[in-house]
Image (cartoon, rainbow, N blue to C red; front, side, top):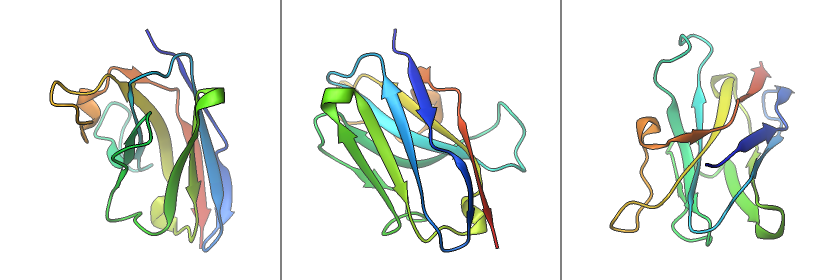
Length: 129
């Protein structure tokens, strides 16, 4: 069982920055990912994949919508991953979730929310124009 706790959400102006944190109770040999759900979507519906990485730091993959603006980093000593978000736009508004799972049998990390069994509670990001 893995517990994930997100923090760092809040409000920003368009063009501004925010950094989210996700502290994991355990951290070894896992896939870590950030997803987000736009406010217009009801709870329980699809969460858009933002970025995912292996906890050894390999294989970071970003969604096209955030590439070049968002950066995922990690502090293994603190079992924490960070999502630095810059050049924010109103379209980045939503509820951001941290997720974790063991790697797939081929060693890769999936990009779909349904493939992740462990989730944080979510942290709200609001970007105003």
